[in-house]
Image 1: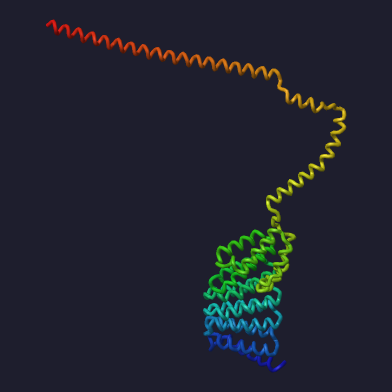
Image 2 (image 1 turned 30 degrees about the vertical axis):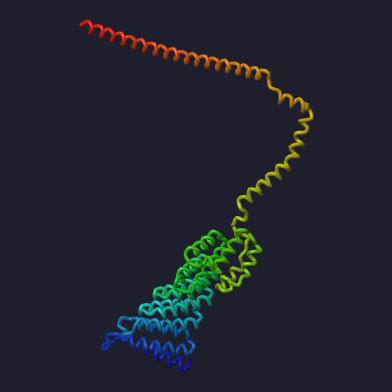
Length: 402
């Protein structure tokens, strides 16, 4: 047993004694116990007894968190953070990450998010080293939430990029897409516009790697309508070329686009993902409607022409026993009009002429009758005038006689 280990056990015994009660000591001394546990943990750590050091620091955190203790949640978080360090040295990564999570919670109770973010960043990096990329992704999102709560969206860029990288390494592209959308919205108006454009371009690349051309096109249209200047930016023009290459199924154009230097400014994981884009399994229509119709017509004509010889071979034996009429007779039969049909036409014409003559006679009779009525009316009017004159003469003769 080394001197450091002996000192650690001495401090451990003192802490246990401070927690006990007796006739003359009615309450445990949590302040003393917490201090002795921390000293014991430090000596166990120096003696490289990391498991026992972790236990000692956890006991110190419990004492700091007691209501009877005068310590604050900040002291609890520091003790848990020390315990996490010892657990990591003891190769207990899962316990170390859990302790850092608990420490971050205690730091947030004090209203200070900076130490909480630092603890969570340690946990995230530890998860990435251990290969737990899903856990790291969730922790990085928590860090971003803390910065957003403090009203510092510009500082969300680094944890969001780490969250995106962790999601891509874990193969969870759906989570990466959500993180990229959130990053673009957070940085819009709060950071350089280039960072927003890079986020959108990364989002389009991830969609295309998922063989989802429709979602990539929608993301491009949303960015053009939401983020001012994206359509005319370098990233916007490159995304247009990329989408057009997939729509036209142009492999040579795609290979040229993948050599563009703009992709090197994106995240390392996104840049490597862009270099692996292929057209082989994409469900994008490669021909336009008119080209498809022309191709179908071509195939139908070739199939019909190939089937004609077979039909002729089948029809030739049947046509050998049939005597065809000469072409001259057919033309004459077609050009000649049946006599019955010609006669019917002449009869119809004669009938029409007779009807026309009858109509003319009726019209003449109507006109003549009208003239006679007019003459009779004139004669009647003249007779009436003569009768009026005679009456007037008679009246004059009577006056003379009187």
